Image 1 (spheres, rainbow, N blue to C red):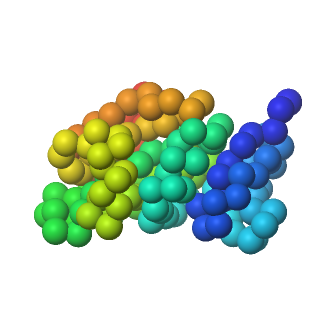
Image 2 (image 1 turned 60 degrees about the vertical axis):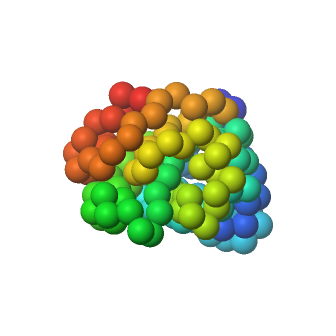
Length: 143
């Protein structure tokens, strides 16, 4: 089996992890951060581009902004979904106010918007706040 490519969300280093080790909390070879933690990570535009382009583990991005009421309402639901999807997909957040290039580059027209990436391509997109069960179902159907 070929190793899976996973970008470290802390330092941006691309790691190769044997598939059989994915369930045993793999860590980045450079900085030691957990690669598949089951927690939502806040990332920047450069890390998003690298992970979306290279990662073999599905990446689900929540594009949001601090002033957005529905975004704030969905945040705890997104975190619950990340815990439930641990090991199957990584859930991350990108603040479109702090990183406007991310919103422009990915053609985000409304927030919150989730985009699922797998195999270097966007597989699905969903706008609007959702409860955790709906997020989990959407992710499982998207990737």
